Image (cartoon, rainbow, N blue to C red; front, side, top):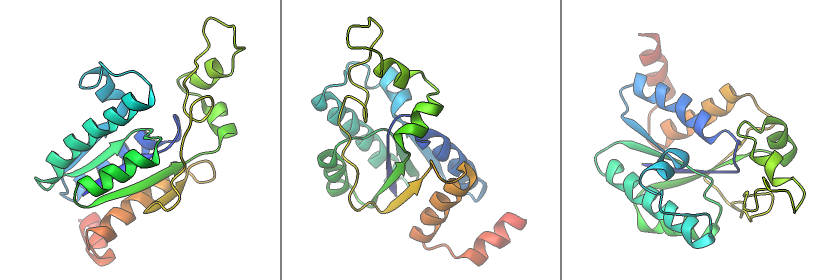
Amino acid sequence: MILQLCGLSGAGKSTLSGMVKIKLQSLGKPTEIIDGDDYRKMLCRDLGFSKEDRCENIRRLGFVASKLSAHGIIAIISAINPYTEIRSELSSSYKDVQTVFVDCSIPTLIKRDTKGLYKKALLPEDHPDKIFNLTGINDPFDKPSNPDLHIYTSVKKKETCAEELFSFIMKHLGIKDSYLTTRIAV
């Protein structure tokens, strides 16, 4: 199983992935997170932020996810993944790809701004620290029109959102709630 989480910077993709990975592994489900930020530092450091480079970044992450998934590992791609065309390409290129839209409002993201990116993107045009390619502000983000799961992180607590993602995965894997109750209680 491959989950391609997509959403704007700061929406909660990495946080939810980490929370869900712990829950899945506690049930003996091998899980790996393919985090866009981490992979840009090594596997994708030659890529910039043009549309072509962003698509190539997702292709590489998808390829890694496919290799893990082929060995029975639940692969969670946690990346902005802004374009419909590359999300569709991943879904059609590999087996059992699920798209999860981690949706957070721009005002909430600006308030959170854990990396200071929104502050820099909203600087005046002539400011030397201005960022010109922040997805959702001055670079496009194609909202998924029909994701397999839509999680609203600006209106729900992270624990509730993580439970939604966890339940989605377990149902997709065909694991019944009674099995979860038994396993968690042990």
